[in-house]
Image (cartoon, rainbow, N blue to C red):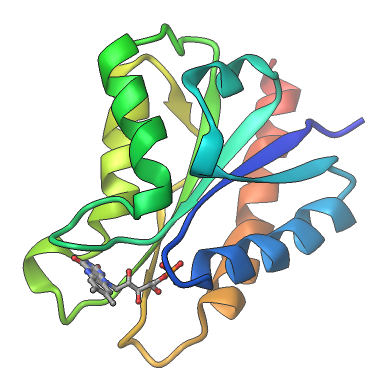
Length: 157
Ligand SMILES: Cc1cc2nc3c(=O)[nH]c(=O)nc-3n(C[C@H](O)[C@H](O)[C@H](O)COP(=O)(O)O)c2cc1C
């Protein structure tokens, strides 16, 4: 069976949730068991559940992770779990009108997880709310490529 995927969602106004829903359909269609987990009450031990993780988060404030992602982000920083066995992907939502902090939420998680030893699968996706495309559409296209990267991983393992 294809690897299980947990989509961890950081959102302020729900866009990342819509993206997670759209991506779930693509991943599930390819045979992956998928679960969407809002970050609200997650602890670092969420990374013990196995499978692959997909961080789907927007950016708020001055390049910060959304409020519902802050506890998990800070707990990972404080507890520094060894995530050496973890594989993850990142979908970041942002707006290029915030020039200096564009898509920083996704970048923050990417940097943090990599620093804890985890390995990113595929390129980080960045959606630009001022770019004229719908985040769900971009994410669905991105997810098709990500499925290929996951397959390559399984074959190599
Ligand atoms: C108050 C506010 C602050 C924001 N700050 C940033 C930012 O610093 N960088 C960025 O790329 N996008 C920023 N954004 C854009 C959001 O990340 C973007 O609109 C995203 O699609 C929201 O997704 P969400 O509904 O899942 O939270 C900001 C939006 C708002 C309303």
